[in-house]
Length: 57
Image (cartoon, rainbow, N blue to C red; front, side, top):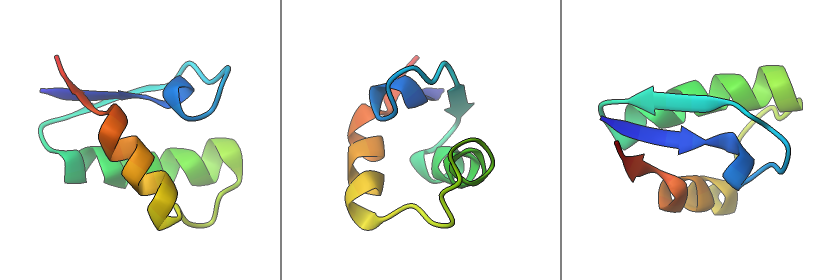
């Protein structure tokens, strides 16, 4: 299982997203980014930071 904590990218955000793969997490992150942070899309440089912040749990 893998995990991403949004607070690693957006200070103050407590959202934690878990998934079996990075791609699964990125799908959920895109929904969260749109709904919680008003981002229509996740720019490639932010996606790279997200991938770097995903850890095994």
